Amino acid sequence: MKINDVVIGKIIKIEKTHLIVSINKNQTSIVHISDISDYYVKNLNLLFNLNSEYEFQVIKINKKDKKINLSWKLIHPLFLKNPFSYKIEETISNFKNLIENTIKKIKDKKF
Image 1 (cartoon, helix red, strand yellow):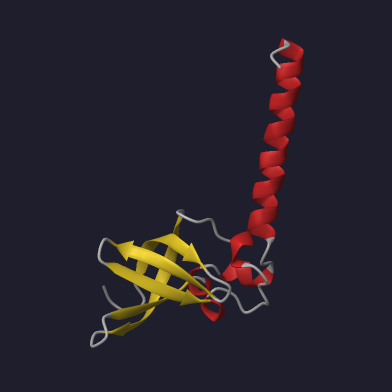
Image 2 (cartoon, helix red, strand yellow):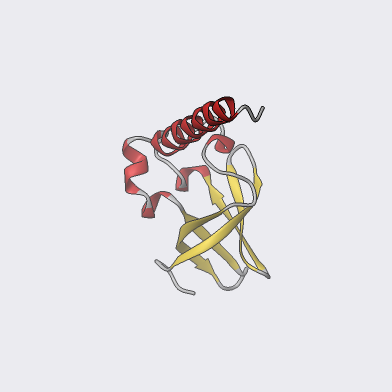
């Protein structure tokens, strides 16, 4: 692993100011909120899901302390322009699916 590599990380903990990400079986990393967005983010739970995997870019490696710093915002530049568009689109899509499934169940009388 080297600086600028893109890695897949699994969110194992969401804190107020950072994410704790597992990037392999023996390595975790902290992604500070400043490496997620240039915008104010009140709650990281609105943007990330626990136990889900995301892409991150390696921005610093401290071999002495065996620490790796990751960034999410460097590989998601559109997020900086509209920070909540991802979740809004996902919510709209899920809501449409819910409505369609409900209508289908009502028509099929499977409720």
